[in-house]
Length: 162
Image (tube, rainbow, N blue to C red; front, side, top):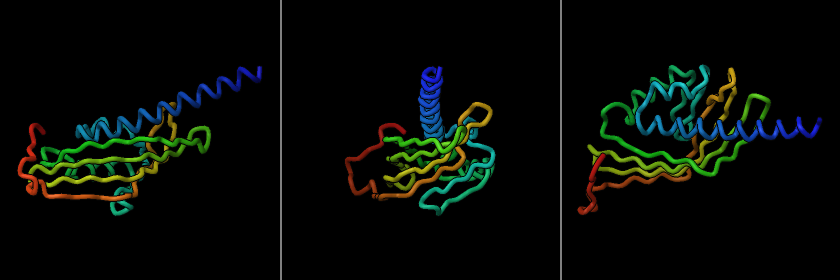
């Protein structure tokens, strides 16, 4: 019987890792598509953030969402972007808690200012399983590098659709 219990535990761990991956991907998709209502469902009520090396830190889902809705990424702003994460390292810290490290590649385009911004960083997250659902308890990133450029420096560079 112990073998079946061990197998069940391993299967559950794999299912939980996949659920955490899907949660992170949903968070980023909602950020890029500015789907704030759906994004709010990715955070635990008492979640915290530490974006941009801790320069932008917030406590509580409502405060986090207020920041995101008011940021340059929100609304009909000229800022559009793509956030990609790779190489997840997910580790369970308890039966309903986990932590994860993700490599971030972020490209932002500011149409009004004709600038581009590229960020490479590492996200450091904590997750909590509440009522059977994994949620972000804490998220933030530390930059490896950040690069900005004036798109006017390349006359042939055009935005075809954004």
